[in-house]
Length: 552
Image (cartoon, rainbow, N blue to C red; front, side, top):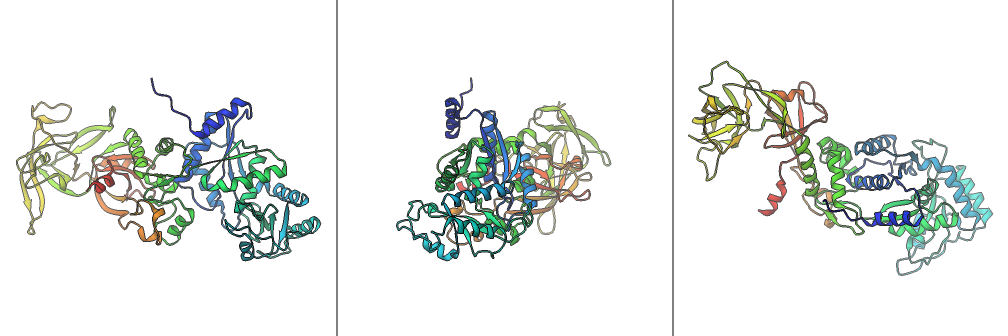
């Protein structure tokens, strides 16, 4: 009997809330800002928020935190929706913080009327100086004691567009000596004369995240507002706003964000890589964006498995990217169609096979699935990998060498009788003979060989381009880097092999189809492909190649 998986701390909280009767229905939300593409760190949050709601029969809203019109675009909204759906989740409601602009404005007016908010004319530099330090209390703004009526008038004038950007803000009136510096009269509204992707030019004042977030949760009656650990200091303000507005008491909980080796999860830095053309775009297969890993060939099942394996923690830690790659390999091994593709071809002439004859062989598409077969042409001339022949074989080398036999995958046993070199001493062709009675599936030769290699028919093979992707950075933990993170980009993160030879069945490859190129790795068809030029991205190697490098 399988061992029951222990609850994470969020599941313990939810089960206690349900048991006590505090909540009868669980409601979570995933609240991305539409200012970039989602990355693997967001995948963890998506799986957590949607997963908890699914487990406890609740719902999850997809709410866009679109309170900054300068950086937000509809393009990002659409990409985010596509990524969430690709991961396999469906939201209860599609909502926007901008849906609540009128209500949030009224909430701010309520705080002013209660004497808990004021309009401040200080510059950003002056306000920063007023904040004090963690060990020294701040100082009150000279505008802190404006009357309620004056603040109401000024705030209405801000809304009416009478003031320029940066000339006035609305601040919560809390405590300039508070031990939590975020509680020292934080800004809750600012002026931005910018076109909003949804509300157009209706508004020229916009709520700050800390003001919009908790109130949006409350409006939607979110029971468990799950954030990453950097929002721990923000929780006091979250609670303060809800308490003083006397609205539905949503509650914030924090978990450790995803930090992973050899990559970064900063949208700002990822944007730099895109704008400075270190990568081809947000969906470059080297990027940790969901659109990037999807194009590379990662599957949503593998990402969900990865998020489940790393669990939910209360402390930040660094997750080895090898675990993600393991999850990808494990899933791809189950679903990938097998194909033979030769990357570094060495010509082999089978001297006792009739000239002009083509024999059609069959082989399995998927492991342990003999009902799904594909046809492969076999002729007098084939290509094998150059590394599958060694003139002077080392000990325990079971592939081709002079006088040695090897089995061609799903075909025949062949023996190397002769090799030919060019003027420079390079081996350019092998002369081999085959054993007609050794055909795979009906072998009556009685010959046992230890080596099995892949191959393709020389005259029927299809040339394709292969893009071999590797880790984007050379440093394991980028948080330890003191200089510019771009100095640690891996110069070998992309290697293009312009012409490799694939078995002819490859022309039937479909977009999104996954392949294991036998002995070479997992690949998928790239969107840059055309009918005349097929391009395949290497999703991952068959084994963890970096682990081998570390052991050297």
